[in-house]
Length: 303
Image (cartoon, rainbow, N blue to C red):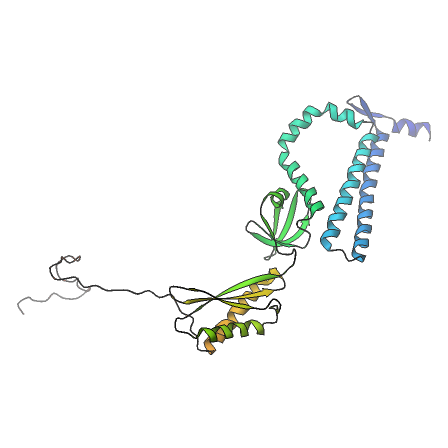
């Protein structure tokens, strides 16, 4: 190395915590950090190919790739700091007070970061799972260090903090299976043939190709309601995210089949009792003639 290049690389840029940063150390740190990022991507790609060849689920592949990537980049960041001339232990001790202050201000980010690591390791939810978080139903698209992206059935991306997936109630419709039981409420008019109604409901369920045959469909007579006999059809479907579409198709088919069978779907009924006022009771209406219609002339009382 020529003296000119050596002097250029050893030129002092600044001094922090007793450590002098030169242009050479800065370039070395950048090279170490960039190399760690490239290595993380290479290892992640290799790990994904190996897991895919062994038939591992996509959620497991994504989790392992992210864990490997974060670990390699974190190791590279530590090496880059040391390449700058800093001793990591001394640096942490010198910035302990500052770190406490930053920790209080960024505790929410730290909580989500730790929750993200837990999600990647324990995998209570995985990439591609159909989940319900609060009032949000959708498919897990990505689990990051701070937040998880969930794509709803309306193709809207909802960003959920990782801590919510750890501390809140989460319904995972993809584990242990993707199957879901759907309930279709069917009111039947009083006086209808309940046995015939049951046969119609089961026949409609059997005719739908998207309804699972095992477990078989089931019809329940749930209650004697105010205006109807409360029946319900229970069917199992293969994928929970199809519940709205399959439920709608079943309702269309049930309406047509019940009409064809002569079984009435009743409307809500109310009985109204009109009572006359007993003789001697004061009428609630004020005395006097009924109001005239517009344009109606007055009548001569003597005529």
